[in-house]
Length: 114
Image (cartoon, rainbow, N blue to C red; front, side):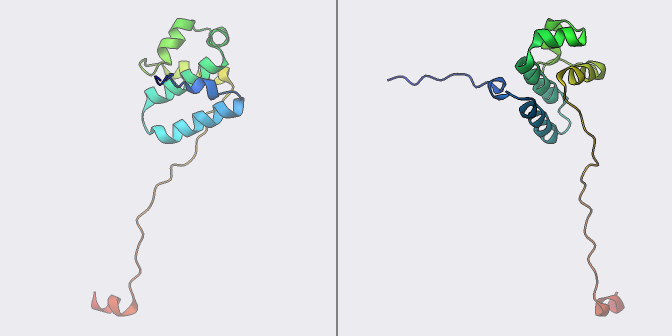
């Protein structure tokens, strides 16, 4: 009996607005400075919501959106902002967590020897 495999598509699991927002949030945490990855995630969310409606809401052609949000395109920040707004998600800013090196405290006897 042959094993039948099908291509996994995240869009099938993006059912609610919460699913979509959590997916984008997780991607932003993991992406680092990988802008094409974030564009691709926005493309996944756009496909889940409906690319035709997104094209109407943003005023950007469907084919242009597919290209820009494919992970291969290089969308402008203005395009990203239009898409995010039309998708009904928000980008959040927070301070980056940078671990500061710990200062070790010297004992009283070590201070005298130094």
